[in-house]
Image 1 (cartoon, rainbow, N blue to C red):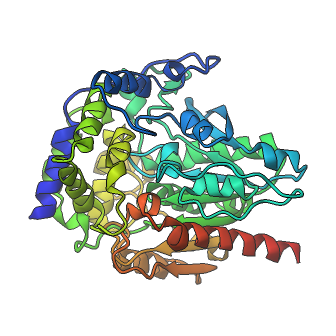
Image 2 (image 1 turned 90 degrees about the horizontal axis):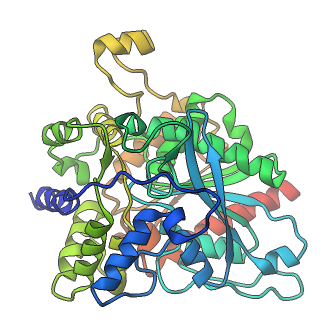
Length: 442
């Protein structure tokens, strides 16, 4: 019951105003043009008279605040969406003359590229000594990888506040929001991977998915036979291929009510304006209300007070992002069937699209598990141990690395906000990458 009330409170906070985004000028690098929603939010927060480090910061601002530089790359998908992706530039790594291996980071639902960089005020650039990368233990995976000499790219999938552009659709058009994690995996991820390969000259890249990012990769690699040849390594943090375990968050969801809510219109969710997001951040910054924000986060993702950096709750709240109603409807279907399937349009349209009354499942057994790394937690309320085990059972063989975080309280959100994100997550990611590269060099 407590989780149910927390979930309803969460959506009541967010379902206040609507903001469908703006068509922006790709040639401008101002905050307003790269992310008009965050530009408005920053202005609103300044009016409240109190701002903090990283609050409502754009990905470019986060990168530059740590001493790195960045490039914004616009990638057009096969179905016309224009994604604004970011690349971190480490001047020390470039000066070393080494050819830097590209790594692509895929963010979770209700997030953007910022999730890889907002854990703490740390993660600053470090000089290289005699052409060699420094030792680093940053809690922010993007900055850690950049310091260690990798070419770090971060996607912003369609519908996020960075990627609300299209070759011919206006974001105020309901058709713009007619997508789910299927289209993101098939079109957004694929277009970005091909763009990175062309831009860098590498034939293969390393890719890291977190939460919804893992769903996108499971869909892409199972639906496009042989596509995993483009990857040296596929790291799935909190891998989600099944969601039927009712012991976690999904067991508390009022699915019939949510299905009605998300079916009302075709548009963004949360329909969140800059003022709403700024107000949420301002509330979470107030000492009396910070516990409420923590309770909402814990109710959805799992409680882990020892890892929660309470002083940065307002930062996380200010950087929440959006998706589509259809995407969340697809999640509800996913929960009810307990397996990733194509979107269920009803029997008549299913026959037209798929040739069957029920949408087909994605064939996980077709993937190459030897390229997969699983990182999961015991207190994850979404990628629960049962759900992760079901995913293991669906593969044709064991994955290359299957790491279970030893902290019994480590939850779904701790991946990017935990105080000990380095020893529990980031160090595992780095060691997996280094072992793979060393193996290939031998």
